[in-house]
Structure formats: C-alpha cells, structure tokens
Length: 292
Image (cartoon, rainbow, N blue to C red; front, side, top):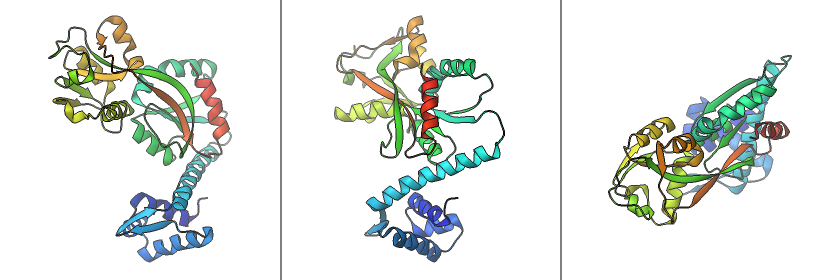
C-alpha cells in the first residue's frame, strides 16, 4: 500500500501548491508540510524549492515523483488482479490514440481474439495527453500512442513508423496551387484538438520552419478523426493526417494526397507503460501478441 505521505507528495506535485493540496486531500496545510518534511528527512534531500513565490520540484523530487507514480499505478493494477483472483484470464486494460484506434486496432484485436477467444479487453480511445494521464493514474495499464511523451517517465517499444501527409478532397479547388507548405495558408485547415498527437506533429513541424497554426487564415477544430475525414472528403478544407488513417479513402479516390516537396514527415507509433513497472514482462508479451 502506498504510504499516505507519498499520496500527499503526489498531490503537491499535481497542484504545486501546499494550500491547494491540503484542500483537495481534506487535511490541514501544516499536515501537508509535515508529510513533505518527513520524506525529505527520510531521503536526505530537498524535494521542493521556491523560486520567488513559485514552487518547483528539485531533480530529486522529480525522481521520486516518477517512481511513486509507477508504484501507484502498479498498486492499482495489483488490487484489480486480487479482486479477480481465481478468474481464468486477466483483463487487459489499455488505451489507443484515435488514429491507432481507428486505423489499426480492429485488425490487431481481431487477430488477438482469434488466438484468445475468451480474453477480457477494455480499450479506451483518446488523445495522447489524456491517455498518458489515465496511465499515470492507473486507469489503464499500457497505451499505444502516436504523440510525444517524456521518455524518462515511460518504458516503451517501437510499434511502427508511419508517413504523415497533407490531404484534401478529390475535387478540391485550391486558392493557390500548392508547391510548398506556406501555399496552404490561404486554405481552411481542418485540425484535431489540442493534446492530439496528430496535431502536435504538425505544430512541431511548423515551428521548425518558423511558422505556426496562426499562419492559416481559417481553422476548424474537431476532436473526431472521422469528422475530419468526412469534412475533407466534402471539400471543406485541407488537413494533415497519418497516411494509414486515410488508406481506404485514398484507395477509393475520395481523398487525395497533396504533394509538397518540402513536407516529408513521418512519426513513430509507440507502445508504452510506466517506467519501472513490476508488470513490464507482461506488457512486453502483450506487445508481441499485438504485432501486426
């Protein structure tokens, strides 16, 4: 069982404010301070420092935060297993980003269920940021993501590398014939929500070229990958997606790739779990079974 002082420490890490942490834990602020001082004495190091009025984690505090989040995750997984002790098969609880979920998981799970027909599977489909939060809180055991993540906090395995392309409807009429990415700035951009790995790849590329999303004159934001594909097919704008996500639409001629010599981008899909988890071997075995 995770020590109550560690729970206090994690809450302070989340709030970065002793008073707010005390309110959320329903204890007094002196009690919060006492718990943190106990841990600092136990580990012989400072966990937090003030820069002016702003609280920040020390390097040692960051190490303890990462380790304690993994311990919390494993404890929740252990509780779940103990409640279901005696059942023949363990439940698989995992997450997939929307592109992975829509484009890949149908085939992956069909293959998995063919080999393990009685398997209990719980899959959540969300953007990268939401899945990492669920993983940290122990709500899922592992995730397959397309977005960026802090590699020091997670153990991970490369799942695939996918092309990232600009696309439009088959009969889309451009304001200006596109030869480079800035030629698209006059078009309506169909965009995934903040926190999406698909969106972050575009944001990082634009930043590397000294551009930003604000350079597009018009933007439509949607949290649904299917909605963005339907809008693209209808000629409502252009978008940037993984090629695997629009494979069927490209083959049917409903969507076409916009060829841009200065835009040659690919990105990894990654299978990950909390670093240092006691269930690491199990996750590696599942990774092998999930291989396409």
